[in-house]
Amino acid sequence: MTTPSSAQFPNPLVASLSRLNLQQYVVYIGFVAIFLFFAVTLHDNGFLTQRNLVNIILQTAPATIMAIGLVFALSAGEIDLSFGSTVAVSALSAAMVMAAVPDLAFPLGILAGIGAGLAIGFINGALVAYLRLPSFLVTLATMGLFAGVARSLTNLRSIPVLDGTFTGIFGSGSLFGIPSLVLWTIAAVLVGHFVYRQTRFGAHVLATGDNARAAMVTGIRVPRIRLLVFMICGGMAGLAGLLYAGRLQAARYTLGEADLMTVIAAVIVGGTLLHGGKGTIIGALVGSLMMGMLNNGLILMGLSVSDQMIVRGLIILVAVAVSLREKAR
Image 1 (tube, rainbow, N blue to C red):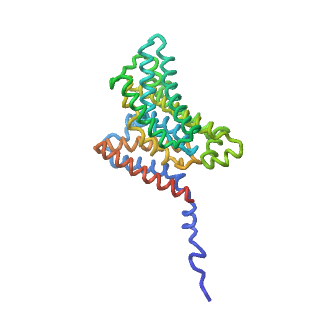
Image 2 (cartoon, rainbow, N blue to C red):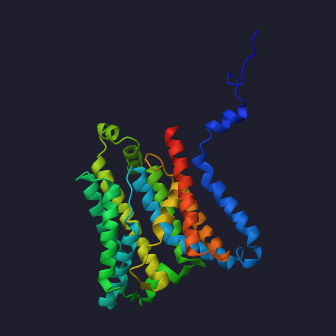
């Protein structure tokens, strides 16, 4: 008489863990783990002070805005590597227009900044959607192209932003004691989450990323969806450029350069799949805050910029591994 093997009757705990969608929870587990680690190790270095925690939120606001746009692009099965350059071009465009037309600085500055972001997104989207070029190569090329544009616009000089209304609304201002950067983050997350989860457009984005051919068969205009997600990505990068310019009270060609790895890591760790068809705006928010908290903690620990880049790179590797594991399942 044979005894049933453990393979025939697997351990219930092992079976449950094998079915667990790790990527769905990894960002929240990681956030809590990193917070507790720094809270214990940096207790005497001011990590837990209110000023430092608020500063983390303020510093991550532009990255969170960019991450929301990237969620739409990745969910549609595409990727945008040019949003860092878009931030710089948008901020510089806004600053230059405000300096040229001081009487209408506030409205024209907003239009110039957001308009530049949307225009870059349109260029990327048109090349991908209608010329059928790979988004990785297109945005890699436009990343370099618009980085050069940002440098040539001002001959490597910073442009001051002197309009008090602009710097207040997009930078140092507050409403009911809540900093304006926090309010912009909350508004972007709420609107992004609603569009992503509660609208037909959001459903079409996910369907396109999951299976573009099947989406076309069901009547979804896939090229239009691809164009729009790149414009969303560009528009959000434009808004991030305005937040940078408002907070720093100046626009520089270097704005957004250091955000590429941080934003990609935040989005992937947050639960958005690299191959499309699944994503989360809330996860991107938590991932962005986690990356900001990580950078802040590493600085307080005395680590160099190169060490911080190594840690971010390792986090991206882990996130990609989890993403590919989810794809295989």
